[in-house]
Amino acid sequence: MKKPSADLWLIAIAIVILLLILAPQLILLTTVKSQLDWWLYGVLPTLLLLCFLLTFSKKLHRSMWLLLPITLMAPQEFFYLSTYQKSTDAHALAIVLETDISEASGYLAGLGRAILIGLLLILAIFFIKFRLLKSQGYQWPKYSRLAVWALVAAGIAFVANEEYQYAAANPVVVKNTAEETALSRRALPESYNMFYQSYPLNILLAWNEYRSQQQSLSKVASSNEDFTFGATQSIQHNKRQIYVLVIGETLRPDRLQLNGYHRPTTPRLAGLGDVVSFRDMISPWSWTRMSVPVIISRKAATDTSYFFAEKSLVSAFAEAGFRTYWLSTQSPLGVHDSSVALHANEADEVTYLNPVGYKKEGYYDEVISPAFNRILQQGEQKQLIVIHTLGSHFSYADRYPANFDLFQPSGKGENIGMHDKANKELLNNAYDNSVAYTDSILFTLIEQLKQQQAISSLLMVSDHGENIFDGDCDKSGHGHNTEFDYRSAALWWGSAEFRSEYPAQTMALKRAAKLPLMTNNIFYTMLDLAQIRYPNMAYAKSFASPNFRPAPRLLSSGHDFDLAAKDKVCKSLPSSNVLHSS
Image (cartoon, rainbow, N blue to C red; front, side, top):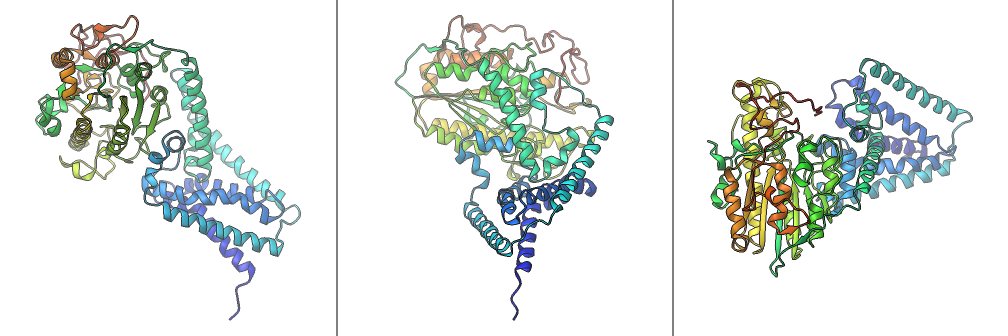
């Protein structure tokens, strides 16, 4: 039997490598609306890049090694796309580069051996191809590389013209501050979104976006580097101390069974019997990127700057001798997240646990539990743990696993539009399911704290509320300037050791359950709970203090939440002059 020639082997290997590199695009083919766009912005850029790399050297056995990194990363991109229906972006890169590697690689758990075998096979294929190309002496004919470069240039010119036409028809509107603009700027214009799904170009673009945003954040962080509170702990303990702040997402107080809601959305927390729920908490902002800094720092409710020129309670706890941690299932980068990440980076250890952020189903908040337990097992005498959850972030049905699909129909597994009022029942059921799941998450954290037998406290507060076609109102989501936008769920649990050590604070917290509170009280309350003091500290702003005095609740617009007139249909407040973006 005649053996295959070297040429046939080379052709076969070339086809295998090409299929490996294009494998991610094959997944996207099943999801794109336009096959023409898929070819133009997905496949074409990849083919142009491969042509350019193969012509880098006149001798093919040298140029082919430039394809090796692309081929080695292709299986990972294929896995990421097939698992999360999302291409690798700046968020995914930040997860790997900025957080604990054992936690960051969790989404590849169980695939270590398969990945190793795959990488070894790819290396073997490239070695065989290298030997064949070198032995056959293949090289580019005279002027042929120039022809390929001309083809690549023509392809780039074509897509550039497409972008010019798009940009002329869709001018970009720049909003908000220079800092936010820098964080939202992408490596290519918005019409190139398909390029962010064109492997391996998306990796290069993601790296550029990651680098750009990191530089912006570093610049802001450096301006705050010398800031200190002068914080100390006024009481020294021999007992272990653990303080936990859970920042919830889009959780409304009126949807908690704890607060009288007719559905069993918080059966576990209600069953504990010692959870204090603050029924009248509001946030001055209805956007995460603006509301969270108000929660964790001294930033004023009416301060419209994107970044705040002070550090957060994380640094105050650190000054008082606490080891600090930040766990998050949200994102480390982006217009909606960077103002939060700036303060998260103050922690001794920062871990982002969700490889896809909020835009896809991704991981559920339950991944926090093992990471939380790992921190507790460190056994440090003084710990602060801040946890930023996805909670009830839309899509609500993406926020909980199938066994929490309690109230139906919920549309779980379907693409349910947020702004179609015909989906009112589905949206409300899915939202309540997400609340029930949050109940389970918080209950688990509390049970883990109980086992430590330490002076421990868990304070949970949501960043803002949500509209879900309430009554006859036609609004859903947040940012509509209604009462539902600003009402935020909040609750507190303290260990038996905490209650015994601080009975006055425990009574103050119980008394605050029905008082008018604001999320800008949280900074002062968290420090007060841990007996942390600094010069000129405003004790009256802590609702854990017997000296707490409710103050006028000014929203970001400057309006007093309690005095402003609200319409009868949507409970809308007077319009604000503050610019928002989603």
